[in-house]
Image (tube, rainbow, N blue to C red; front, side):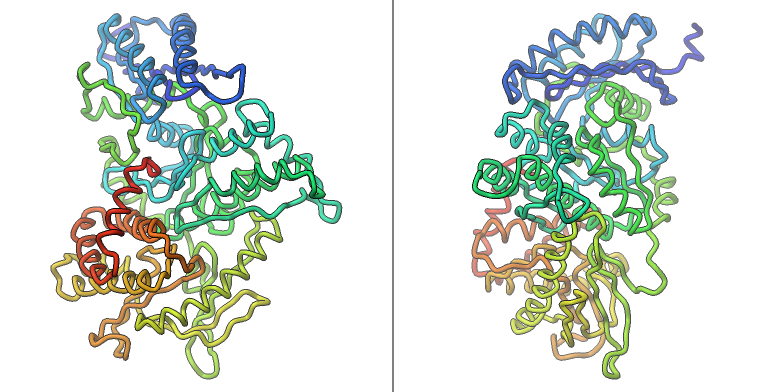
Amino acid sequence: MNRKSKKLICLGLEGTAEKTGVGIVTEDGEVLYNNTIIYKPPLQGINPREAADHHAETFIKLLKDAFNNVNPKDIDLVAFSQGPGLGPSLRVTATAGRALALSLNKPIIGVNHCVGHVEIGKLTTPAKDPLTLYVSGGNTQILAYVGNKYRVIGETHDIAIGNCLDQFARSCGLPHPGGVYIEQMAKKSKDNLENRGNYLKLPYTIKGMDLSLSGLLTAAIKKSKDTSGNHTLEDVCYSLQETAFAMLTEITERALAHTNKSEVMLVGGVAANDRLKEMLQKMCNEQNVDFYVPEKQYCGDNGAMIGWLGILQYKNGKRTDLADTKIMPNYRADMVGVNWINNEDNIKINEAQRLIPENLIGKGAEADIEIIDYLGNKSIKKTRIVKGYRVNELDILIRQRRTVKEARFLNNVKNLGICTPTVYDVNKDENSIIMEFIDGVSLKDYILSNYPPNNPNLKNLLIRVGESIAKMHNENIIHNDLTTSNFMVSQDNGLCNESNIKLYVLDFGLAKYTDVFEDRAIDLIVLKKALISTHYKQFDEIWNNILEGYKISKDYDKTLKMIDKVEKKGRYL
């Protein structure tokens, strides 16, 4: 073979948890070999050491098979999954990568497992710049490319969706991996009155673009052990799946509304679930955006994704010395500098955004926003619309509760001296609120058009953002969806502030009263991630100005320490 004309070929090694994968990919994206073998424990649950032993045995078998298909002399680069993952598994994978690179006398490169999922998805689908929902046994994240990094703009606060399903299955005596068997059992649940499963009420916990699954898991396990109710294990499996996947779909829709991406992509092992794909497809249809899922072999952990990401990074200048191949169990996607995406090309791609129907002035994750005339006043009507991806009784309950809650909190927060739209009418039958029309722009757009933050108007406005949050927290009010899309800036004269620039706080559908400090910290963490997703270059200055205003909080120091504590717990890894 003529080496000058030969395409770069990379061998990728995947071994972050219980799956051992080897893939061989060329620089033009041709997958020459891809095979994965899963470790299935004799008893339920993954033992990290046993999974590592499985990797040590299986890499040898897979490499032998791979080299029967591709001559090892044709390999130009060895890539391995450096993290995140289980320490013992990662160590075996890194050792195999080093040994192979040394024996072949080829360069080695460590790559991020999570980013690998995104890039193999982009390679094997038409997706160009997607909002990515990544769901697996160890990860549940919403990723978006912003400013040379894949930013984590939504994630679980506790356990990953795959872990949730596996733990529930284990508690019920179902085999590993549990998601497959839960999906099968869910299809057997029947409601005698409706053509679907028998839905049982379970906790539904959304915090902005984040979610929590531990309470749902505990309740589902408890429900499965309850023999006094008129339900079956199949009903519990159905209800767990419907609730968890509806939560995942909702936070993806919220992230979509905030970022205005025109594509959604689903990746990870749990992406194989047909019901989850169906829910996301319905949501994307309602939001007028494209939806993509890679073929099954590229959804779960695989060596091809590691090899492909290795090629992308290597061709664009990244090199890894042997001394730098130490494993990184907590290797977040947003720690990776993306050197392979041309920002000029990506700006052109970003010009494609989701389409808002002409009869609306806004379409959020939950509601349609339109201008109406109400008693001679120009007003806003916000209607929480039916979500086709949710089972009917869950959807009705969520929309009614959030409509009533929002109207109540808009009034209560106004009494604290914070600007909110005046509520004129609440219609619980159609889940709508008619409220004051605010002639302004979102804080997100205001920052973009008024940067730099040393602009006195912008700096003072950001300080007032912090003050508004502190006033709410001082009264034990947690907004639960603090994004820059839920603040509005108006330059009309009014009584809310001495300045003619007025700051409004919107959308209290997820709000609650609580004195738990961790909820205050999470409120601010949600805002941090929203800022990073859209204002990454100015984040430090913007955030410091907001914290300056937040100093009026009665528990400023305690809350900031809690933010640090929560982030260091590893919940956001």
